[in-house]
Length: 159
Image 1 (cartoon, helix red, strand yellow):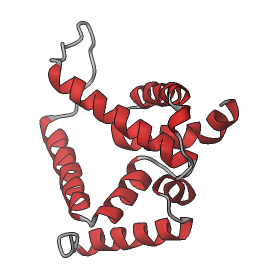
Image 2 (cartoon, rainbow, N blue to C red):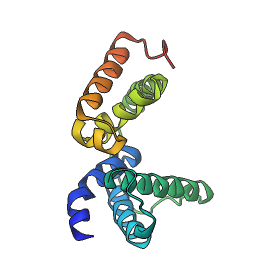
Image 3 (cartoon, rainbow, N blue to C red):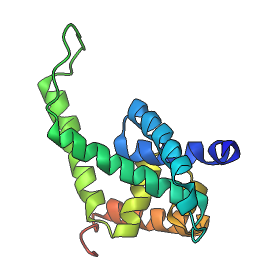
């Protein structure tokens, strides 16, 4: 299992980072992913790559975390002074991010997933292809097409 960890930990971490956008949470869920993989190794039937299987476990753990977060009400931390951007700066930044995410969300499913993994997760095209069970070339082409749709504003053209 050590060899599997060394070979796939970075891919699983980057996948989770693309989903969570939180380095600490991605690291925690990566560790939990490998713990769960060890516990359920007897259920791995080899019909997919190990990296795909691990990312499926990771995705399941991420969804589990989200469900748990919905049930819990976060308490504000005391004594933490963080410099805040002006309301105008924050609004402009937030609107830009939200608009980009809206446009990415409008992309066809494959392009959306590749754009998320590449842009927000920092995965290489090889890693994306590996995670999604496709080739590196497929990941490159899919990302390029998604990026071109975003540039042209045509993300809503296809579903």
